[in-house]
Image (cartoon, rainbow, N blue to C red; front, side, top):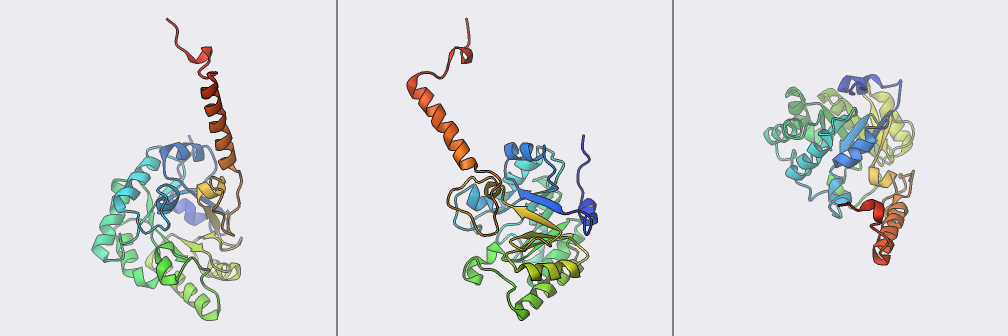
Length: 267
């Protein structure tokens, strides 16, 4: 049996080995991922879009995130499981943030949580870390701030914005986060932030020089025909594969060739 990956293992990869992170939301996908060399499984609030069909991540509830996290954790994957704290689960105050973060470990079986934002959520980050709950930060395009940003836009462009991003990253590091997601920021800025930090960075749309990369598993596998942002590479096109399989099944059912004799029980 492979040794489970810990927070310390992730920290120790900085500057030595790039970190591989993908999302998962259910046991079936997690079992497949557990047969791979993935380091971190993020149970992302992206579940609200790819699993529930929402236009944004904002509608996801704590109970929904705990459900998805528990589905992943029951597999007991080798990869580190990180639960994504949804909108308004930590922004309202320190006490609520700690309580909700604790639910991810106690009820969801995660080993860490992720939350979005920099200096404005530093008090929450510090309190969660003090409660012995590991925290992954998230800067750049933070999807829970989509309306404040005026849409899904690249962040950190320009000298002032880049400096602010770096300051927020350093503040999160000082607050105790063990790693930091950088989403949709210029590659050069992500590289500068990565070089400035002692903790690993994990990029998504942030260039190749972060300490690791993350993609939504449905994007990576090509399970949508329509959705393909610039930063996504499809390593398969399962939309077509699944459609072909279901079409073949439907054809055999209508023709009466399925179930065949080998699929039937005998007296």
